[in-house]
Image 1 (cartoon, protein in one colour):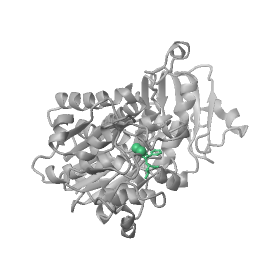
Image 2: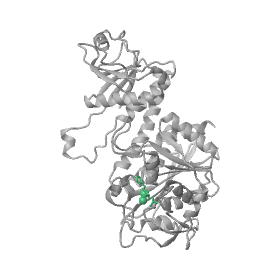
Image 3: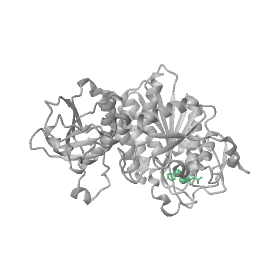
Image 4: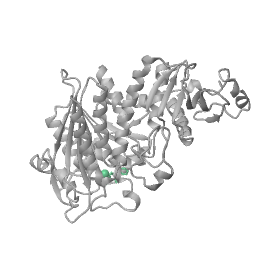
Length: 487
Ligand code: BES
Ligand code: MN
Ligand code: ZN
């Protein structure tokens, strides 16, 4: 997508001009030809409201009136949602080029308004067509190829470039999540090694099955037993501030497909399970985006990758396996596989990577979706500072987070008669018990567990998210890392 700026008077020809209005302030003084439309009362400027107008002459084929809602209620998120509505309306008309006006507001700075609008247009401008067949020829998706921001200073172009890089990180995750399950292991490995080759401050190491055996990562190997494809552990590091000891380590669940194993998922329970590697994609995408933005921080992604398949050789309920940190786990449910692969990865990271904090991303439990739905992710931590920064990042980015309790009394449910731990402690408080299991593998390192099973994969497009993979987490983490950078 080509991005430029121009004054109103010198704007280029385009398929569309986006004209935003706050609700109750719809006046047509800049566009007298809109007067009849405005007087009709058909367009009131309500949040996300759109109306097309076709002028007889001018630089654009059509004008798109865009409602922003009440100015006093205006926020970064309300702007994002409004421009997402504009972007979808434009897509429906197969618009390729757009001139875009940015609103003014007493509440939000010009820069904030510009960035929110841009983020949203970029995020909406996505289509995953790799797996389409004939229908692609009949109805090819048309995306914006050229946008011009009107009356925006040249000096703002760097904000727009920054927003574009972050959205590229989001798309990286969406593409990996939307891809076929059987292609994911190769795609994740390829993405991590390719990026390291092209970026001087990034290194990637990939442990193959043999190395995992040498390292005695018994839980990743147990989950992998029912799969034809070999497992791996991807470690991708970006050193943006070599002088600093701070090292943020992100660990992401990389289950390329979750059948449930011998505790096979039933009904439609398996249908969305190609998305069970979203954690791995998110941590790799975050490290790559941090590197392409040149953030002055040190951040590493660790991703245990395997399918949770089903086969005669599958790991079995009742059997016991030994983790990297020496703890033994009685498998009480082969469908609680995410915590197993994360257990090995977290304890490896805690022991070998000198992390100043650990943050894991996982589509860990269905229970978190029952509790918080498709819009909100749950997080668990005992560290007040990490919790505060995460909530600030959530507020800024609109990626919604809610803190859940790591209630220690439920630990009893995770004890085993024949081993140190069980991997599943029953349905009630399922997400908390998942967190309590993971806590056994982080030692004393400050740690956050993010269970984002809800927002990472959705059935329908909503606001600036497209259907299926949303890429939730990259925008949140980049904001979080930038806060660390400023500390
Ligand atoms: N990947 C699933 C969790 C999940 C469910 C993500 C629905 C997205 C949507 C996870 O591996 C799982 O199966 N969890 C079990 C845990 C249980 C066996 C303790 C669950 O949630 O039922
Ligand atoms: Mn599972
Ligand atoms: Zn899973």
